[in-house]
Image 1 (cartoon, one colour):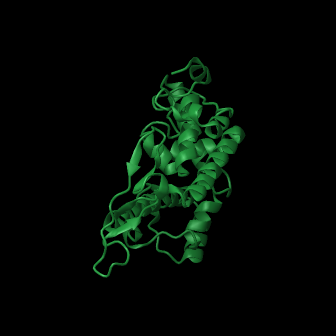
Image 2: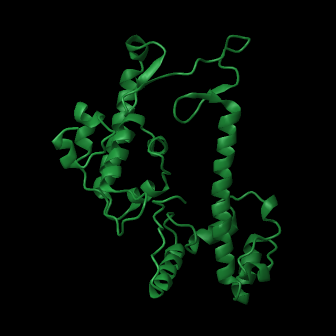
Image 3: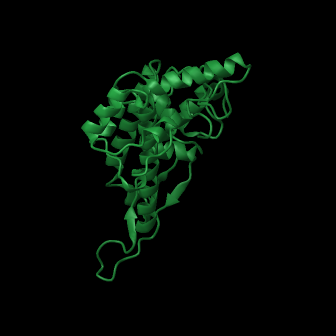
Length: 272
């Protein structure tokens, strides 16, 4: 590894930037500052590695996955008020990956038939051999996933279902927080019931417990109860109302600080 790379703080296992001027040009951004150092934090070095991988994959999820991390924390960096330079590098990396994918679509097979362009770590990955269907059309039991790779359709559907379940659980929990907030107000309880026409056990709501109808109800952001939850600030990142989640986190950190405890890693930089 050259001294110039060490000076830039680039990860040792990433040798593409020096060989690729377009990717190297993206790495001169100002990293998003971190308030504290914790295990698994998105350090400047890891932020640059992410951008380099993103310039190759074009997928934030896949770039994070290659690094063994969730993309939750890095997406928070993107939304950070201090992340303008990082956002510009992110958008530039996505544009670069898209342009190269379009330019290489016609020549990929001529360069190396049956293989994909080298990944960030320099390895050329062979595309899975598709299984032709009896009719000769399409791939039997296989579909292209979000990474542009063939995968069993059942596996894709299972992962998609798991992702939907995770999102639904987060939305339901945000709704429980909102119901707990209004459970002590007779007027707000009545308004919620009138607007949503949903049965609510307010004693359970006050204890932050699930409602009886939750398991049989599909969460939808178009429904009145979820719109109310968002408008009152219980779903972060949507730009509605005050940041109630942020207020709770600040209160928890203050409580821990008073007792000499470390603050919680709210940035999702460690394992969630």
